[in-house]
Length: 213
Image 1 (cartoon, rainbow, N blue to C red):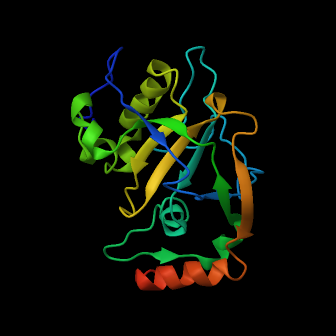
Image 2: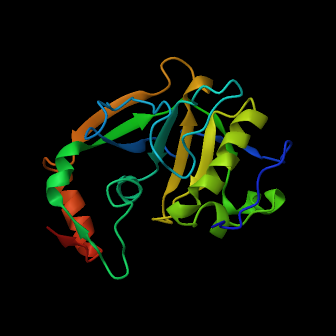
Image 3: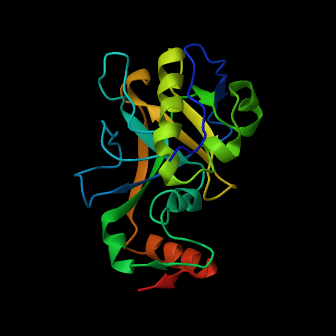
């Protein structure tokens, strides 16, 4: 069943905005080692099933993608807690934390991103409800917009948008092929199963009334 999200045209008026280090000195990235041997600087190369990825280049090869959030809580909400309902609160299997790690990274300064923030969506004939706040069942209709942004704006190094799960957090999806080598600097990487990050996550889920199992 269609979610009613229009398809992008061949020449959309995407807006490029610079994301500067002065705005967000450190970004947070949660990665999971359960299904792939990922590390703190691993870009996805065609695997996964997210709102904006996987997408492909004009030649059909996968765009290398990497998600980051402006806060640790935003990163938790977009990864570990992404599928857990908040009303009524769901439950978290705490043993799963053994597979999750939080990386703090610094990005090139600046990076140019296609903005999917609210002010720039009307020009695309879209609303935040369609592109950002829609449910996972709509990913087949949201991903083409990320792919069009990559293909139609050769200067774009990523996509910038506001988190669906935590509206206090800014999010980025980076395009690995458009970034310098190395694409980012990893400042620190910590397991979510080990103090102090474990306590931070548990404190957060208790505040959200999510049940621990």
